[in-house]
Image (cartoon, rainbow, N blue to C red; front, side):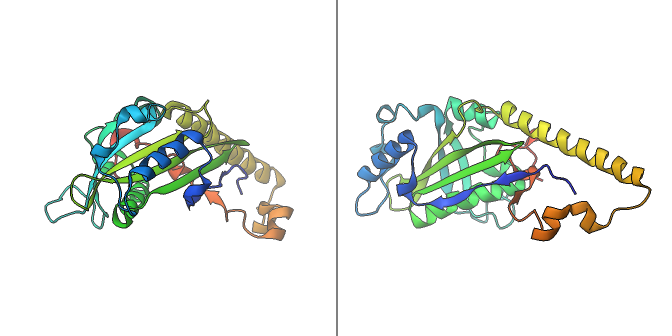
Length: 244
């Protein structure tokens, strides 16, 4: 049984008081101070020059509830969400500029469902959401902080989302770097699988499941309880923009 895994320390929908990155805390306070009695501010109430430290890491997304005319959305997809503006640092992290595209056109199916679900939750509740995703891969820890801030246009309905994403590790800031880590991880998995098969073959008999697990795992149960599926490791656009 492979020992090389991606371990997830992801914390979904943390308390907003848990934001410990100063630039995100400042952005949240700026949005909060423009809100009135819990009603999200209008997009025109916010000014880009008031959030200079965030400009490169933000995206502006148009959101709306789906209608029967939305033939380009997957069945059951929670909302129609289109990128209107994407900062340079966020573009590097995504690996391409998704401006003008729907999120389900940008991401793989599973990632689009997670991103779409988070945006819908913020739109529907008119509340901001803070999320930290952190992983350990080959004994290296990295991930990102994500802040979702709902905004109105004129009416009471939320029609815009201000999305801010900051990588946890300042040295891992591009899609190529993130995919490079995954490729190294997959190479280690492949090598271990090949070597393990040769090891068992050299014994002259097939190892039992208990032997394959090893004494520590066999005693403590499955080691997959906190494992993150490598195929969904990066919340990045799928190569070729596949929706499968």
